[in-house]
Length: 68
Figure (cartoon, rainbow, N blue to C red):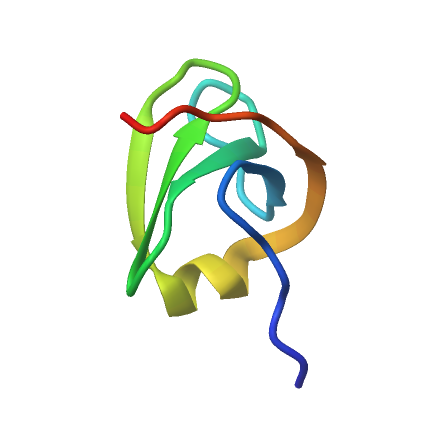
């Protein structure tokens, strides 16, 4: 199976909805864990890379993010 391609600042669509109703997340940190921010409400979520790749559907777009 091919690994999914994503980069820092990508807007990705997830399989499950966030409680606010949005399925789009912005990747804000990458490593063994992936930190993402909900595009709807701005809540930050940390997931292990394997779980993130399993639950990610596709890359929807790209944003310019500044180092926090």
